[in-house]
Image (cartoon, rainbow, N blue to C red; front, side):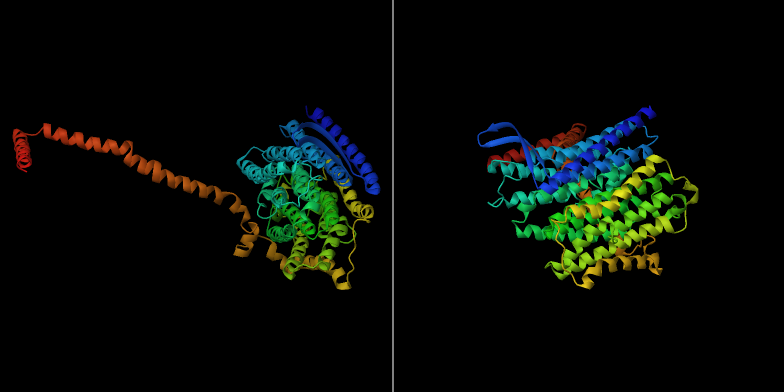
Length: 572
């Protein structure tokens, strides 16, 4: 059974690599020819409404699909190693393939109704993957993930209903300037739920309850990038409303800052990488708010590649340490796993934007464009701090998990693991290094280089080196464990977004329900209802029985009393 499963896995990751190569070749052709094809299959016409199934084939959809399929192939190869020994491996493989299918369905569809099918497919399959390990923690994480994304579903359905009066659900054939700004607001907030922007950020670290191969796929090029991709598709319509771009800019800034502060105080290996994903999603939203559509797509691709590499390296470390995820108990991994450590450091440096790695070509251009744009000094300062924090938590991760002494030696293994672990890591590392300059060369005509002075040009590099110095100096003890001060406590709880998104909301409704039960059901309903009538009837019957069991003088006294009452009434 195990051998047959591995054969199926090998077949599928080879197919995914093949389709990724085909999509890349088509992307090169479409990027140079600047052509866009829309294939529309009309299903039915009713009055002025035409319901069709369109497919859009352009450089954006082809390049996104190529990156996603390549990462999916690497994840499928890695899952052969990581999921070995699992009872439901076939189920896991099928869910991953359904996830990839839903993502491709969403990429190539410009129609809101058919896009919703891929959108919901991602939501349902992501729930099943998050709760793959059947325990209470996974169930709670799956529910908050599912319910947060349902907010976006509801807003998309509202947008679909609102667009009926436009006569079309096709994004590119619809004029949003004629009083339909409400639709764009719904789309933007729906994108925020999928890309985990403030205040919908709590589900992203919670989704780490899923197996690590799922995290590598979800947090690189699939679920969390759907919101960014949707905004890229609506880009030309969104900038009709100036307040909308201002809103996107500030939401991205706050999300980047919050994720950076949370990652600095986090000790779970997978959650640190998840929060780094949230930080870079904020950078993408920020770049869209600045109007840098091409740079946003560029950073989306480079980030997807090195983030998948980060998760695969982390998965190898977790697996070799018997699923230990606390970075405080790791250490000296370079001695046991030199290839994994090298790949992890390359991915970390790329995340920081270190010169001539893939992250440098996209992130550095975004920061330089930020310095050239006319934005407020507050926004500029917050983004500079967030960039510093990105390097800080990356260097902290390298120090705690790789360089410092091992604190949990009996749990570690001296093996570099097998080919299914090393091959995807090395392949992803090579692509992560080459993707930056390659994509920059392909997109050079679309990306405008800002003219900067020397200080502004060196500012990102100064921030990177400063953060590395802070971590490896005496200040490193500040970040070794969670500080119980309110600042660090709020950072570790994502500015209290995580608790406010789950338990307090549920408990508030439960408290209202409990008060209603005590006041109404167990209160007035019982007093005036069954229990009240029972008490009154019991009192009357008890009084009557006392009278019937009394002596004759009681009856005589009552008779005299009644006689006096009758005489009194008669005389009156």
